[in-house]
Length: 330
Image (cartoon, rainbow, N blue to C red; front, side, top):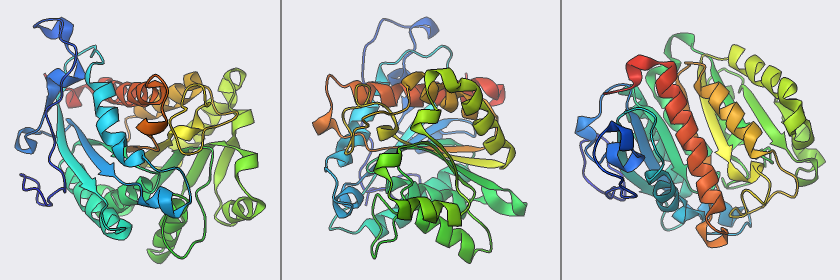
């Protein structure tokens, strides 16, 4: 464990961000200029990054491993992106799954995320396989955001439902795990998915989704000419909740845009639609937890997947800062 000003220690300490530098002054700001590694300096409204180094869920799900290196690569892709206005951010380091202990990694990630959320930070979790989503959920469920009856909404941008009923948690089970936890708490999981690929989901998974009341759009319903349908879906989702968990599995994108994932999409949702959805959610002003999953640098081509993921994170954080000006720190 790594000591820090966090009450809960991470496994791997953060490292200094670096990237292109065009000179001093706000007109040259990039992410690496504004990220601090000192959690004690963070103030409510700042962005916060935590990584989840995990391949265990993908391994259990019989996928192609390598996503444990995703957090490092995503940070590198984000570091040189230019900021339109100053904001502050902190990187608290990574939770790492070792010795096949995915369950322990989930608990530790949940503890870290809950602490950051309770400090009023805008948290982005960098995965890791899509098992990261359950650890993120544990954080939001354990935070103060859901007190006083606040309604949680989970929006998954993904080709897959990830509702597998398996003996052990994996990258294919996180939303069934959430549904069971919500049921145990006397609630029904408010789960929506955008980008479902019919050939990638069995009839059993569609039946499970129906039983759980899952709302979804298929990839064929999310094309560039379907923005009105997508907007209506996202607006209805936002109306259904007070707190948002936005989880992005990069295999929602076409393989040409995101080749570096365990299961590249033969069809996928266009980048312009995925970014539009992310921007719309971030602009809602609702409390928001974001995680990004399945970036596998070993399978990437020309860093396309890393750059696509970084652009989505960038757009979400820039939009959320602009939509709530008090959060943007000078």
